[in-house]
Length: 127
Image (cartoon, rainbow, N blue to C red; front, side):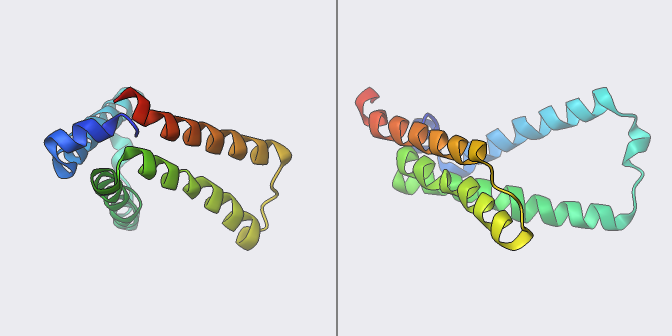
């Protein structure tokens, strides 16, 4: 994410996101074709409807929003703000789903935040 800022400022957030999404989609399709028969795509219509909704609201929109955030506030700030997502997810799973939160998860969260903060603070030194 930190390295994407330069490319996004050069080619634009929309084009960068489209290129990255195309490459990621091709990799996913290739992985599916290699590991599964095409008959595995014979699923009920409801599966495809839910898949499209999840793709749009959980992947496409967030990826474009992230690229626009990098374009407008910079990659360092975007990565720092984005690192809050998994922490909020962990907390909400604990709060609403009754998931157990282990000391290992808390330690990992602290390490991730420390890493993102360190990279974000040092990103300006390498420009």
